[in-house]
Image (tube, rainbow, N blue to C red; front, side):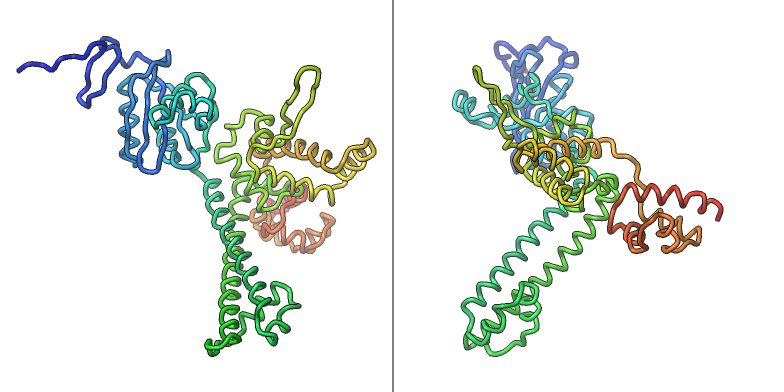
Length: 428
């Protein structure tokens, strides 16, 4: 039986792919992969250390497809790293699988428009570009692992945001229906607040819908009940998010000006592996709070950073806003900078950069903070009352109760409380 002819310049594998050097021991060759991800199919490419393309192939976007993709890459040599586009969307599953197999995954942005105009656009070209970006170091970011509690926080926040949006839409529709409602209904509801309108409309009794008054009441009742249902749903999600945030990083929640929503936003920005952020400057750039140099010729200046994660930027803005109204040190800073001629916007930008530095430390190396449930267990073990603890700590019993139940977070108070409780709990 005759053998098929070998193409010039390489050998042919059973699947029809061509190799550049059939005499090379593939296991001794270091290769870099690149993947252009899609909803149903991922296109992969492999290059060697000189950026020469070794092959390209499509695989199903399924667990079995991930396994075949990695096996195909390893057949070309030792896989040093794999550049993956869309690690936060279509490539999330593949990135998790590769990381689980011990492969270094590099997050790759899509090619810029100038390069696409020059080279054209195809899935294979994008996969090759991803591989070359990983090899050259143009892409060096580590993707979020998305395999822990922070990923759970992310998906719960997604449900919460959609619930808030739907509730706002229902409230707006109630308001607009009242504008065109019959006079007797409009005069009754027009002066009420949103919550009062919802409560009143939810109590409407069903009547005949053959005339405008009855139909308007039915519509308002339906929207009001939807509003109440969404409010209960959002409250349940808030409780779940508060529990998760306290379990992941209680020190972050205890920082001044940081509530559950702000903490959840910053945790999602950092991911389950916050160590992927190499420095506080990189975190500031990620949040869009680092100034961007815009110097030219004899002009030296910086401009605002309009990039980065805008939700994280908004979270830092909220922290600054709260501290400007309640934190004595921040108030003193604002007064000093105002006396120097800085505007309020400029002061807020400076404070956001400072807060980004503080949040980076809390996200990457959070200090130990006693949990409220642990403090409560120690207090009950020592048979102490809330009033006794509050008197010693110089606060109100309700403040201790809220701290124990995780409603409020105060790192300084929690540490003093723990120091006071430890000898008494041991004696008990």
